[in-house]
Structure formats: C-alpha cells, structure tokens
Image (cartoon, rainbow, N blue to C red; front, side, top):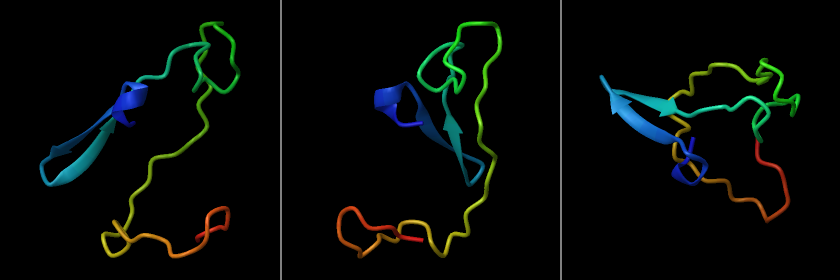
Length: 65
C-alpha cells in the first residue's frame, strides 16, 4: 500500500489503515487476466505493537521470522 504503488497509509481512530487498489488484470491480480474477477490471495491481519518497527539484524538475503 505504499505511495509508489498508488496506495497510502492512514491513521484513523488510533489505528493504521492501509488503502490500495487492485485492478482486474493488473499486477496484483493473481490470475493476471482482465476477466471481471480479481483473484487476490491474502488475509486481514493484526500485528502486536511489541514487534512493530523492529528491524531484523540478519545479512542481506537471509530470512527473518
């Protein structure tokens, strides 16, 4: 939802909301076809504030879980 991709982050009522658009057949439509159906695998989530903003300390190319 970052600005370079047409999205934005909005703080509303003490919560962070992510606004973004998925276009049928566009880069974030998983089936890649402009066929009247948007396939967007994903899920709504909530992240505990205790881990927000913490950076990983692993080398480039490694995984951080």
